[in-house]
Image 1 (cartoon, helix red, strand yellow):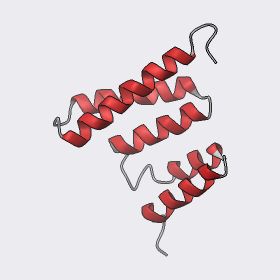
Image 2: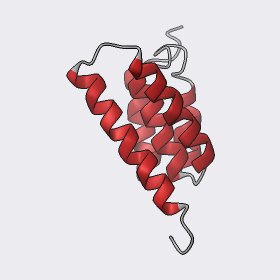
Image 3: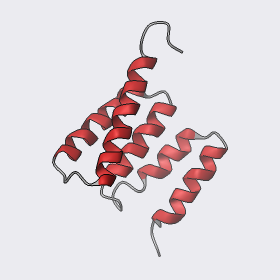
Amino acid sequence: TLGTVPTLQRRAIELVLEQGDTADAIARLETLRSPLRENPAWKLQMAELLAKDRRAAEAESLLLALETDLAQRRATPANLEVLHRSRELRASIAAAAQPGAH
């Protein structure tokens, strides 16, 4: 058995998102937690999906863990991009939580 093949699972995630099934996308991404060792890109993608599924507290918690993790890594262009996107997503979540925001 091949087990979970990350490339195929990522494509499946894209397909279920196209169908609007965020919960299934989250479940599928969860299967990649161990194979990808919760790398920064995995954490960011999971946080994006959680935020899309209106699970803001979980998304924000994961983003804070991601940013803590990135602070301990080399400042490569890829890590800096993930950090930038994480901060943007946290700002977006905070703005959505403001009274009167939709």
